[in-house]
Image (spheres, rainbow, N blue to C red):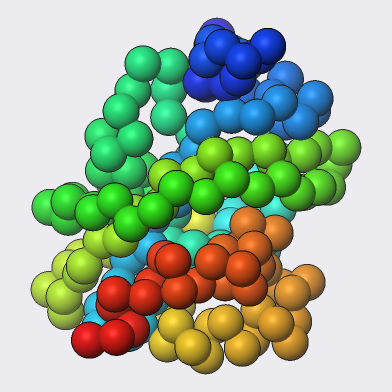
Length: 176
């Protein structure tokens, strides 16, 4: 069965098949989570089998909520499905809209609810190999600098988040 996600068609929020949304560049809902430990963020390299942006580094996890699913519930679900993390309750940070060509004839036109989840040294991470090929903890400023120098190593959305919206996403964390 096709995965149905919330998308805007003629101004109304309706269920749309995920691949159709990407192939036609239809504006749709998404969720991105950044797992933080102080000023370090957990990033993942997308698995080689992903349908777009495979092998590129991205934020901790991201997805599209299912039709009828709340963004906060989706964030908790995706932490578990992608990273094997349970017991974290991400806090809403901001909502960002972007549009980007992600290759393979696909366009991400997303309205993204961004969440921050605070991890500690006891947080167990057990990535799903179908989703994630590698993990790395990196300082937020170091990550932003590397994305600016080598954007080809990172997903389009991570580049957009860090080049255009870093203070909106991480401002409160970085001012501590």
